[in-house]
Image 1 (cartoon, rainbow, N blue to C red):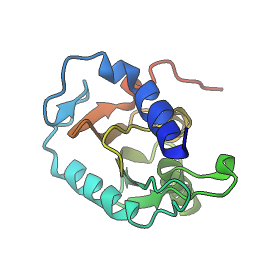
Image 2: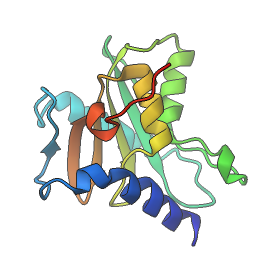
Image 3: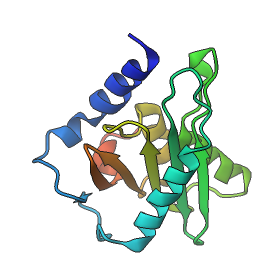
Length: 165
């Protein structure tokens, strides 16, 4: 199995079982959060994630991912996946964006939403990224595309039993 197939099977399909169990998606899909699915900030955030995706360093898998995180002060911080020949050292786009924001002085709780765009049709944040998103904004809205639809959902629906110390 090549890396792209592995990522697609484990990172996108296996990690999205709760979403796949729902009724068929309509476009766009919204979770139980209070933000409307046509919120222009979310459309802009997803567009920024698509733009960031173009900077991905994915020479081993050709699987490009971009992320854009919206801070409460209105700033948008982007990141992309960065691969390494030692696959375990690869950094996902979501974590890159969050770690970049932290290096800029942002703290947990400073974010309202994160959008992720990938070069695959069926994609959602991996488990490690869900946990990192939770660490820095457990009330965040998560936006991504799955099955040709835009999914807008509270993080709690993607990671219902969070780990906290």
